[in-house]
Length: 441
Image 1 (cartoon, helix red, strand yellow):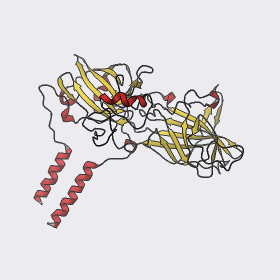
Image 2 (cartoon, one colour):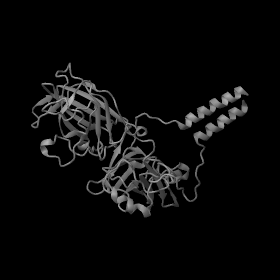
Image 3 (cartoon, helix red, strand yellow):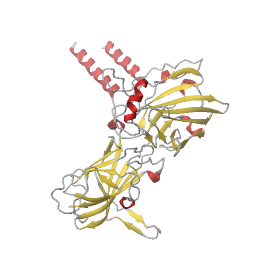
Image 4 (cartoon, helix red, strand yellow):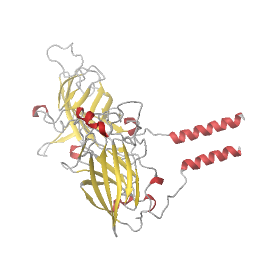
């Protein structure tokens, strides 16, 4: 009896661990080489330190940093201070009481730096600064996927051998999610003059690499997917509690439509990291609806609608990544920009979509105009195309780099004369196998 109970306990623990396993690894299958690289270039020495240009490169294909922007922090190894900055500022000055006369910009051992806002006077700017911390993704616009600032550091080393790199690098966007590695000494950066006839280089260069994990950023998803089609009246909603559940015992979890006008004006127009959601059964800030709209002889058409349910957030430079096997035959796209993402050579099943500048690249907060729409026209591939078994619906959807919750496949709209393929899931197979094993023991 004890042996059997022990075996049962072990099998139960195996089953529990198998079903509840969640990875915290930052690897992204759709962007395997994506990262943010911070380059710290020392350009000149000063009597008690150095002047450096710090550049943040966003090499992520579809994950950008939106308002209110990035926050970069670190820990000084010695007793360094920041004498001055151009193109950015420290959020706190710290205790500079021991200095007489010339007061440093920041004396904290663990400073936090933010970008300056647009409209900053030119004498306080540097190239690629002053965008409010907003950094585009690399696929959307490489020219704006960079942010820079200049920093004058004192009470540090004044040679390559005595200077020390900052440690414990932190990057917020503006919330958590990024993990940064230690600073590495690399080949000095080189710079080309305006007339392209001369090259100069940094005296010393450090690189720090930061990778993103959705699990570290937040414990719950931020978007979900609903589905519908012309050949079935069923509208498949986002799964219930996709991003959370309405908590009737706690006020302030969401806002019902009749109460919106009394709550929203106080926060309207201001991005707030704490969401104020419209009450829904899915409780997600963002819903993506995929509607199979029309079937032609050689083509088929899809309508995509992105709806914002967050009254505290306007999404600037939003983007969406969709995985579907027919993107290799995408013929036309209306009112969205498009770029294929080919993380693996020879497979074109992943597309990045984003808004057109000054038209719909700004997704307004929840309300009558809190949505954007597009239609996609696909050419049929006779060897692949079918409306059966949910083939016309996406495999995965990401919004602003976060994986959206999909409905279960057996709930997809089916053809009128078809029934869902009740294929046995791996979990059911495992459970049956375990119980069969227990019975035979």
